[in-house]
Length: 330
Ligand code: A3P
Image (cartoon, rainbow, N blue to C red; front, side, top):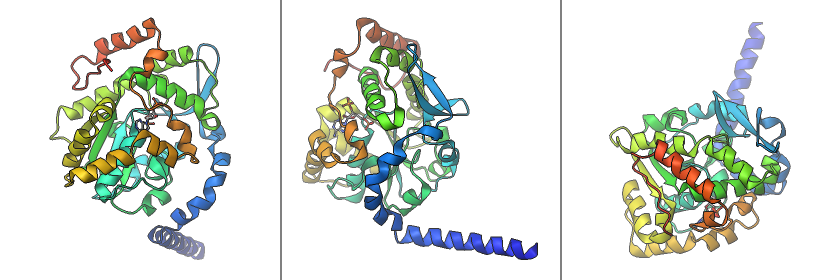
């Protein structure tokens, strides 16, 4: 009995030693390019969801349901361990509801904190998506890291509060966001397997019956922090603003991060993170389909008058006093 306890302890120590060495020498990052061609075989959600969302025509997709909240089918195992994800002092965290420009802003942040105008090797997902990526990859990433998540503040890793990690939240007008989210869910076929129509998806989305829940509740909850900056350093970045005035907005982000930048460097970031530049860099990646149109105002091609009004009504009902107010005069 004593021997087996001793053996277990030894095994545990060996495992932890192996983990530390793998992380230190970034072994997994070297293996990733070799594993990437097989990624599509792992992308199917199958057993990773514990719940299905069904639209009114009977079309459905798998999700994870945890403590009453809905998440993509990343697996309960991952979602339950998020509070314990290890956070470093110099980490930056990117938040934002899905489809509000997170991949774009992730690259901007990465360039700013690393002082290099180069797109990341793997993009936002493998580059620090804490909701889905295993700890061994996150722990192997070099500092300064730009971690990212679509979680609410209270569901983020505990270390974010402890270190007062700087948080950048992206926001995009809700009408373009729902269009982009629908296309996301349809285009990631292996992951969602959803074949529903836009009108049916819209009804789910406006009720918050989708992964990561209601857009409105999401921004309502972050609004609390934006109005109380002494609680936590949070910066809100609007998709439409970066589109219209990229230089000014990148400088605003740099100021928040306390990073000194020159006009030349910011101009390089603007060029390297243009939609076309990012789309071509990711052309062969799993994320390729996420670079769809990259425009402001595509909702006019998708939403009926009633759907547009339904969003306006939700806004009036829930979001009147919020700092962020969308505008649609693109
Ligand atoms: P569309 O589906 O409207 O094209 P996220 O990164 O949060 O998933 O958001 C994805 C949306 O941002 C997609 O919108 C995508 O095309 C757009 N996007 C990605 N990179 C962009 C860039 N460099 N410039 C502008 N939009 C970009």
